Image (cartoon, rainbow, N blue to C red; front, side):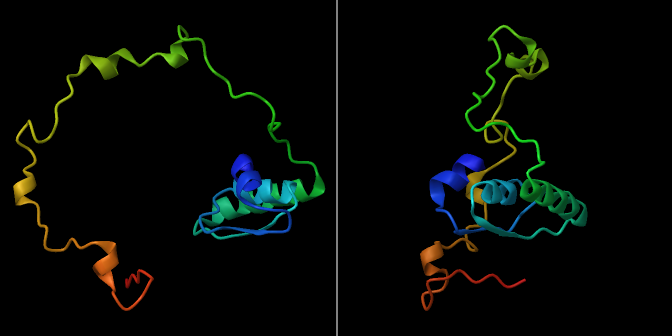
Amino acid sequence: MERLVLGLTNEDDLVVDPYMGVGTTAVASLLHNRRAAGADVESRYLAIAERRVRQAWAGTLETRPLNKPVYEPDANSSSARVPEEWTAQPVRLMEEAGEYDPEEEDQSSRQPLSDANPESDYLTVTL
């Protein structure tokens, strides 16, 4: 997220994260002189986010250095191999197995987004 914040925003920009989770985007924003706002429906995640944002603000949050290379496992290590049980099962498409017929799919409710509301440039969703 840090690279995205740096690449897509300028200093003093407001970075909004509507699915804030544990605050990774907010932390990255604060560390690089951006303002941050976010929301989430999970109070336990917001509590973690608040703690992390406070630590970032105080300069006590441990973070991975931006210039540290991403770990690439050796091709022969167990973490780089596809588990054998994944490759042992044959892959079959639902259509080939007779479990899906595209002709039976209800197309009546599908319409292009551009035709959803010709009076507006916005998609309106009513719950």
